[in-house]
Image 1: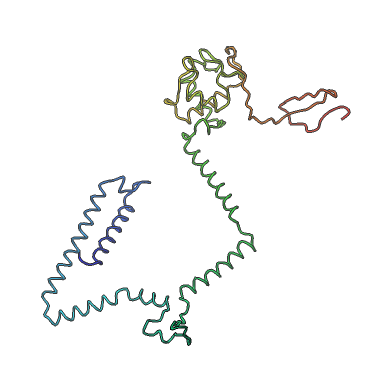
Image 2: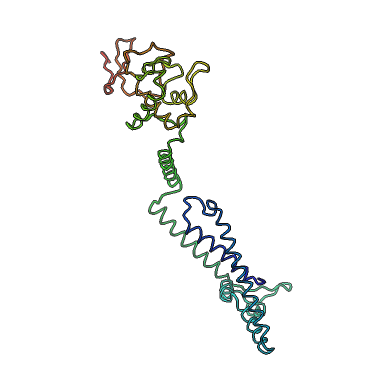
Amino acid sequence: MKTTASFLRVIGFTILAFFLLELTIDSGEQWAIVKYPIIWAVLAMLVFFAIALEIVAASLQRILFGGLNPEAKERYLAAEKLREANRFGWFKRKYQEMLDAKPIEKEQEIVLDHNYDGIRELNNTLPPWWVYMFYATIIFAVVYLVRYHIFDGTNQREEYEIEIAQAKAEVEEYKKNNKDLIDVNTVELLTDAGDIDAGKSIFVANCVACHKETGGGGIGPNLTDDYWILGGGIKNIFHTISEGGRAGKGMISWKTDLKPSEMAQVASYVMSLHGTNPVDGKEPEGEVWVDENAPVDNVEVKVIDSTTIEIEMTDEPVVDDLRAEGK
């Protein structure tokens, strides 16, 4: 292996063998060479085989050359020299055509007819590759003008917004398929019946000893009223389940026993118990918790007199007009 061609053939064979192994061996999302280290040995054997073939071919060439008579050797060497000179001939010709440069021996043909203190100027033309690129920029400018300024194509800001929306949709889809990625900051109330039933099963299996099956409370507090020791709402309940209650007297942390998706299901089930008011419910503990971020949809405003306004929140549709005497 004394020639560049031999090295290139071995390298090319190695790359080809590598990709063929990767394509033919099913390794899932991993590289086959990573999942199955034995492939390193197979690839090494193939490379060794390629090197051996090159050495054998070079040895045969030397033996055959040594058996030639002097005249045949001269013809062979002359043919090799010509072949070497013509190697990459097509690329060399195309390169010269793209430059369109005059060789030094023909510079007299393009010398301009003036002389400044011995400085002579050559009338070289622009290289074809430069001219073609210039034409390409003109074509691009015309297409750009028509696309974005005549037919109102999507501009960069709109493309950015579309890509952001697409990325958000992909993130949501990823979260949907990987529910255990949620934490206290990203957890949301689950309303699907399947999630609520799953949360109930976990609650019955792990929580009834302290909170009773109805959620009315036993050793632990009542989970059905408006009073909460560590705060209500999906995020606070999820955090309490995950990290545990008050040190020394609260419930234990469940994050080592339950997956994040399971804790979200339990927290959602606990919230579904609100307002059920079981007959054996425990007395309230803690403070009334109000979700400050909860939307207020149905509000009715009544003017009682000139100094008093009554605001009533109802479950009925909002009445937009102010019903007031003497408005």
